[in-house]
Image (tube, helix red, strand yellow):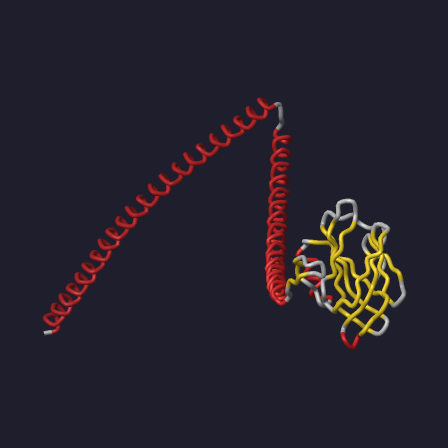
Length: 274
């Protein structure tokens, strides 16, 4: 009875042992397979590393060759130019400094050009203003000229434009057709004007009349009871030039006016007047 029960227990232990043994075998096989796979990957990685090292060696060798060739080329160039490596480097630095200096000069020139451009713009603006002023002055002169009139003189000759005040006389001067000499003459005063002399004899402010004497070429030419703004005409000089005298202001014992002479008339050595 007891011996029969021990047999099944021994069989049960044997089956368990076989199962454990089978699992251990499978684990061992799996470990071998994994080790083999890992060994293969390691071998492949080592092969790649070896290839990379070979390529690096080739690149290093090529770089060494390139450096050697560059050195030989540099030395050859230096020898052909009669220069050492140090001299070549100094030359390169000198060229670099020159290039920098040229760039700086170029920048300064550009700055000066910009400044000149601004100055030119300012000058253009000033010129534009001057042109505007000249146009306005020309317009005013034309207006003043139109307001003046030409008259016949006391000799019956057609006179030029007559100035009745200082402003109109300035217009005549700008026209440049004749020479103009202003004067202020007191009663009984003999005064040189242009190339003649004048002496005031009488004034009549109430009726705007006056009487004076013109001394020319050793002759006395009396102009009696002449009117304000009337052209008084007389000939003088060896060329028999026509002078005109206009009085545009009459006060008690004083007159003011001007004498106009042709452009080719002699110029007085000295003149007197206001």
